[in-house]
Length: 147
Length: 109
Image (tube, rainbow over all chains, first blue to last red; front, top):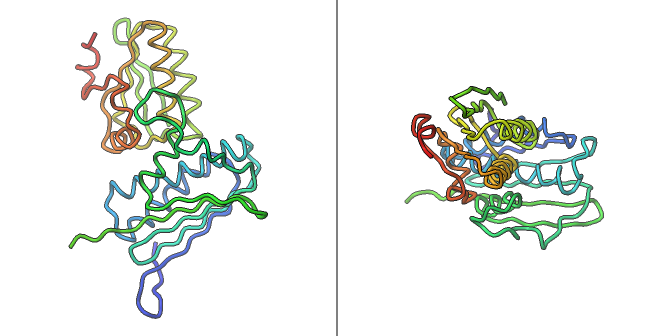
């Protein structure tokens, strides 16, 4: 995977997935997100964590916004810039219920509810927005350079 | 994901290979629940598992709780660094009985 540079020499790459809401799409997205994270400069462990967080966000759309329906549409926009990755996911299903986001107690044996904790732990900023064009999930991960 | 099953005395060992995600965790769930009915001890070999998401973790918790209700043993072993990382992220290490090797997992009571 190669990435273009801006006029000022900064590295960037924008990748958009326009896909159906089938779980079989997830491995393809994971492969690309892992490569993007590696390109920006994260190590293998962080790349895995970022990939997992995006996978969880998409799985939440399939399970909770579309209730497992396979013929719906999901947009994923990934923007890799200098030391930063931004993800935006759009769906047109049910809006997320704010009371269920990170509602599960950490470390307990309750089934389910782990995905939003993973996303919050891995990403630097996470937000959810619902508007006329659908629901937007937005997350940013910033590279912390060692001094 | 591939699921292989071996007999180990009265126990059953499940070798998981590949990736467990939203698409494959229902297959794992069916297989583990089915096996749990047939054996007093179920051991999951996760050495060849490259990826697991929260749906896979949730399935393991569900099977573990079912094993507790049925008073059967449910153990995990051979977690790869990638899987260990997900267990740490989800804080589920303390829930399961986790071993490094098959020998340790099968000799535990």
